Length: 300
Image (cartoon, rainbow, N blue to C red; front, side):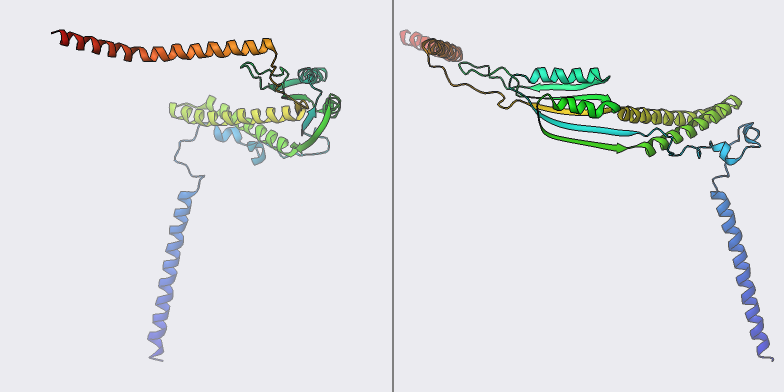
């Protein structure tokens, strides 16, 4: 018993020390955690912020957007695109591009871009066709006239290839609308705080946050506008080409054409001689001066 007494005492003291260390560590950890709690702030609260939100639920404070959901009644946003390759009759490419422009205007759309590529040779005596070889045009038409526009475009020539695509962006659009509603709710709250701010520091702090949320609102509105435009107006890109395109003709060896070519080559040769003479003139002048000096020394 005498030997077990000191042992039990040592065990009791060890347990007591461990308990004290555990309690101390818990207190220190709680203090450290409370220091990192984002709800604890050293900033001076703006007057009226508590009263403004008093009696409101957390959902009301943050802006209730749960009601904005993709439902059967939501206007779906479908982005449609098409690429068509069209072979047209020789000499009609410009007219067919104008016809596609007219189709877009008639359906309530517009021409986004158009271009014509040609490869005209200007140096005689080679003769080339003046007709364009290919062209590309991009039009935007209301989504409800998308299929009809493609059908009419296909009647302007032989359809070599055609591809269409669609993308449902309804969920993304609704999500952006929800973000916008929440951002506008925050903006409204920030404006109320700005009106209640009493010091310069408070005004500057609220303005910084207000500017950030207003920038976010503008970005969301821009994305919504772009997405709505892409859904409301479908994009159709048409590549056109003529079967033969530009064709270089053979040389015409008639007397008149041969005479024109001879005159052209003669003038070209004369131009070369004149250029060569201009380059040699300084050298000839230096040589002449050298001979003159040599003769003067001989006479002396």
